[in-house]
Length: 449
Image (cartoon, rainbow, N blue to C red; front, top):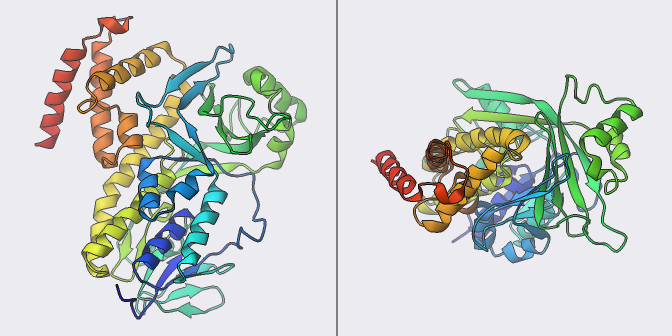
């Protein structure tokens, strides 16, 4: 395809922005990327406030399509399930799927971002400008407005500038626009489980580890260097909260009481706790995702979600994949592409936002429940018996390319049927698998009509 005469201005060089710039460059566009932060490849932009990412098939598809998946997987570690750490100390493993290929990949946000920026710049069509905050856009000319009164002209503006998007904020001022922002009462702190003296992982490296404690929890995801990035999710205020953990003795007593098995493997927990900032957890919903044929949003700028389904990055990458498909189908006609993109992705973004909020309660409260574990075993057994017909909500979301909205609906139907038919049953062999299958297929048929 012949390169367009006008360039695309893309705001934000994070994960979604870098991936989208690579797609556009491969399609022949000249892309100017404006990023408010310094270049993380040459400068330390600060840490202590991240949650490792879980790369799954939705996010892997565009990476494979662009030929960089193998390179990314070199910095990833497969996680085949959850390892639950009750206070009692008796570990429980919950597999994510029933089949060998069903696992998610733990990957560092920074390392992945660097690989995407490198790949984008290697095309020769992407120029990333660092330390260049965007302050919005001119709705008449379509110019991107930068700090200091400078303006940049492009064929279009793509806002991939995260939850605090300046592009989105400008859209909010331009008439009818729906926007909501809701924060949890919980925040998070990053902690570290270092490798052993020989550089090995000190707990199972192929698991996502969870210490569920009802109103709060700790999780840990593996890194290739033998360490784990751990994250403590805790309420801001209340009896057990960040607010009440200020003194050293209180912090130590908290960990000794609720996480006794991490004391030995997390030697810097106190230093990490007092040094690292508290991160916010929120959901952003917007509608529409575009303004005229001038500007469009994708990723967190359009639909920031909480991290409890491991789908924030995957959803953003799927945005890029869908946007690229539409760009090809409609030959770069933004007046057609923008509204179609917004319509197609909005309902699915809302669905995964709901699912992520629900999964927080599941991870925090339910994963150690015997009733919950029994129902999960039933779901896996149904999946094993009827793999082409009955798929769990988690598998539909994580291991398929079903639209999030459909995955949510089908998953809820499965959970309802399993819950109803599990009443009074204690053994897996006593469950009516055939009857559950027939009931579910009938429900699936009705929602497809």
